[in-house]
Image (cartoon, rainbow, N blue to C red; front, top):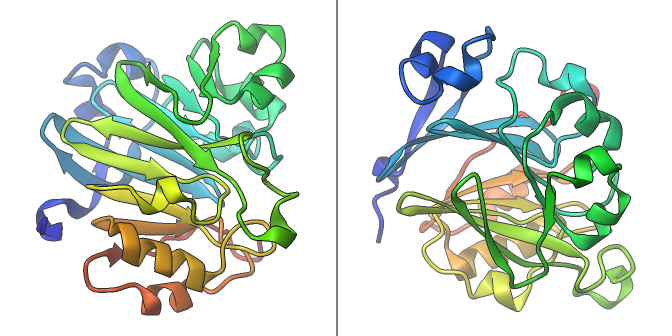
Length: 258
């Protein structure tokens, strides 16, 4: 079993001075931005994991900063590095917001779904590529695979029907990160192997219960899991039900009163 202590090393901050010393210089040289968060040690440099809110997060690796499901307007990203790539799981408003994208995307490449691609204005569509469930591609030279993100419980199917939304597997060096999007446990999720970090949603009626999410984690056993997209659910219930093979990371995904 992988030693989790060698996998994620606490909290880290990469200030501008650190970023500019490497290949990040051209991206950040004109900003005062810094990216902080948890550090995932990979065979090809550290990955910084920075939660933003609800289902939005940033992944910083080498000279890239990937925005995942960015919403909330430009103000939500003040003080953060500019996006060099964007990943969108599906078209619901808590994952996809055109004004936010228009404010922050610039010329960053976008990987998304056919549903979202069809809704993008032309300026953003020119930089976007859709992946269907099962497709593989690259995003700024990072391997990406799309897997199903959907409901499986009969009375929830209308929220996320099959074949529309994506979860994503991103490979950073020797580590795989799984961003589930909005989903219940699917055969593809439960069959995953060697996942270093997983982000799993849990809120009814749209995704999973904490118990469903914990049962899924106990099946595919990621080394580290972050519950996210959990408004209205208790992440402590999830944490208590996760077995010893996985470390649960609870982070502040919701501002006070949100």
